[in-house]
Image (cartoon, rainbow, N blue to C red; front, side, top):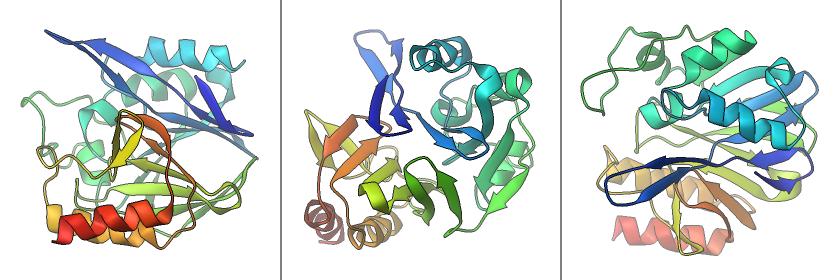
Length: 225
């Protein structure tokens, strides 16, 4: 658990693989209606998520809503359990919602989908949430997956990139080519993010890193090259 700025927290969930440990970084954002979770992790990770929230003094009763950035199981897999524990309102982009609610099977994965959950509010991009850190804007960033979104807090110059960007060894990098469905579209999304005034980025894979819009622009240019 790391407080990125007042009322915005980077969470850490880890899993053991055959030869390494993998970390994921959902976020929790304080709003005027309660806590908004940005992604929730794999199936079976709800207890780990609750433990992370407890470090900052929160419990399930504090959770108002969950925003799923895209359909992948490492982001939405624990949603059914979290919804059952909290009664949270579920947000997802209209291009993502059919995969979350079961109308479509997730495009990626091992063929065994996570439990579907109804999406209460379908986003289109540019919506704003009132948070403890100022307005937070939904930025449509497809490419890694259909209906992928990132979140931007301009007053804090903070970007919650989800999988639109990654980080490794403290350095901001582009989206994973292996796991990205459409790299050309992902590059366009990175270019869109480069137009934002940013000084810090939280990547779901890689954690929080210092990076500015020039670095994001360079990543976008390298994808387009």
